[in-house]
Image (cartoon, rainbow, N blue to C red; front, side):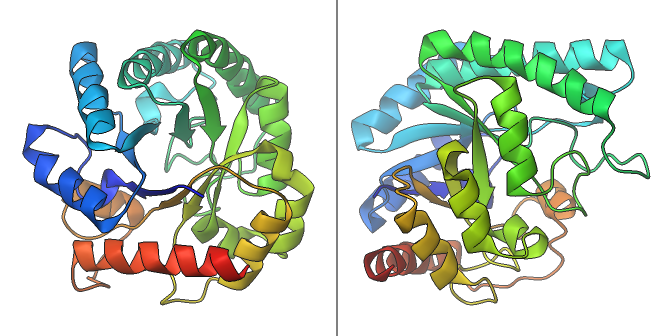
Length: 281
């Protein structure tokens, strides 16, 4: 099993200033990092970052999200076109990074609601565009890992079954990112959801119910790890936690109070927890 850390705990834009952080994550024992790809102006910088990460022994994966101005499920053709262009630019950066996956809620805009559930035409528009994005990513050996979010963050895809069916419609190689935080809210039976949709799970986010240190909250961890292992999941397990270091991200993830003492203590405890849970699953 490979273990990773999502860098959104510290930054939305990885630069040379974060190198001591990356060295420390490697020293703690992580195998990979999930790199936020929001800035798309300098593809060469992602290539340099990817090479440097691999030299350190950390495999780079990529994660992103879309705002209202780039919502590919929108009724507005101009907004959809902007979203498709943005996703193509993100794929180019992730490809330069050398990421095997591009993950995140790329099916629609984070925090945008219509007051009703997803319509068939919204699903169709998003599916069509992501089909083209999957084709754009494929020559680089990159797979999309489409993330369903809980009902308070989006309305288009909330549960694993819907996301798996959506991914299948996008492309034969499109996958799903399974996040334990969102599943804790949306799934009636996490083990059954994993078993029924295991063939589409490309990545797993290990995230506690309060977004802090995995293992210190209410997520039914034994059921999650046992079901993933029984299903033959062999992708990475990636910690996703959020704090107060980034005000804009804290607002987006609704983090209003500090729920852990130290980011690196969280990283160390999370890695030990994942290894222990996987071993006994």
